[in-house]
Image (cartoon, rainbow, N blue to C red; front, side, top):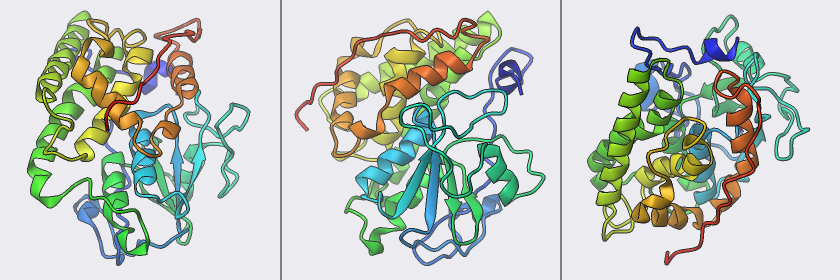
Length: 319
């Protein structure tokens, strides 16, 4: 599949539309079906140490969410990880440990992530995406929707020794969901709408929505440390992967260049605050991030040249 086919807009107006994730089972504490059952999910995926495996790209912001929750909840020993090569070519994500930080497929020795989708569901024609959550015991794919995987990591393993911390507390869920919806529609996915737009009008509309969202978030963080309530929540952790990539790839490669992250003092401090949470900095790899974006989209960057900058440091704020 070519670069232009993978990201071909699906509207006459040239607007990019993201595909829906196709595997929606849930890991729960006792193996009963989770909220994903309405999307075809089934039970039988009980939380157990060492049973599940996570396939990620260090470049992908959606996969990045899951690595952050895995670190904050102390699930590194319970959930193993493999990392795809940062370059996504004609066959989509592949395994190759020649790039520092990438790995081979430790579970099946697959060359392509797509091979695992076929192993789980022969004939599957779903878009192959990261993160991909795998069940070693049943030898099948559990879920490839990052928003659901982080909810599983948040609570399913609590009785098995996960670190304390509820990043989706019941009392704040309505507000968290509202912030998440705004951030997803206009920023998380908005950078892609801008980057993969095929008309000037679609691009301009996406960029205007994106920066209006950043303006709202900047105002929301005035005088406060976190987006919702007075505690770190899922809303902050879903925002961070986009912000940490903003100046390095979205500002230039995706033409989201009205302003930089550093032009937003509150959002900048917020990014630094999350970056310095225990275990989070280790999930950020700018070599993977820049190599993927600048090297995997030949229609946007035909030369494949990866920029040396920006030179960035994320100083520790008062946590």
